[in-house]
Image 1 (tube, rainbow, N blue to C red):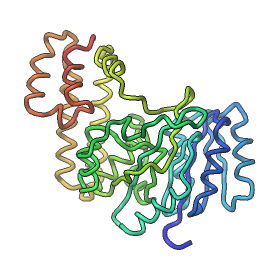
Image 2: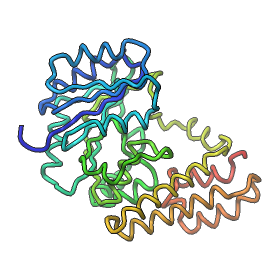
Image 3: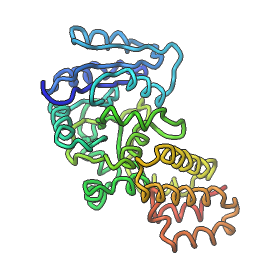
Length: 324
């Protein structure tokens, strides 16, 4: 097989129910993976046994076992650093890949040497594999403007506002790890890889679904439908530590981009610093709603919520109304 070699990094967590189906879909790819690395995070069921059976006879397959669970981010970090391929495809334990997923994504990297990170849409299915009638991008409310902006090289501005990349759909070039490792505790691995690749001007997406993304009660992390009830619940949820967490994330990002030096375009670094300042101001707002209003309204008038808040106008309402 010509072109870049592709490694699959798959993480498991008590995931025996759907793992065989997922591994079979990976082994059935029209462009075979060069290796499959399964990193199991302390599963107490038959997950490892299922993986061993499903991978029997595959030329290069390894199973890493964590006696003490590392958690989602550290487990994925362990998995990707154990691979050797030119490209690394991330995989969850309970999805199903379209047969030509790796072929189509690897071709994009072969055609574009500057591409570092690629993600796709996915068809949402339920626990027994029935289509939910919608896709991942539809559930995330990804707009036409988002698609066009990412294709045009504006991914950093878009991802800085909110992450649109879901790990189960991601393939990235190995060299991205030089800038992205170690994964910070404040970020989920997929969104961190996306934002660092975008800062390096190397992120894009495929608009078609290349994965069946399974939603069920045991997902480690996942995507919820954008219902009116869910949106209202977020607005009325207590502030807690959320805004302070967003401020910490923004600071971590600026620190990493500064450490990468001249590899990061100056306009991207300045945008990240503005995001940091915005999130720090939100985190410092007082508990009393009436005292928050001047800051919120001033920031809204400046367009900061439109540029930097994941939900735009909804976050204006949230910052005005949320209980302390």
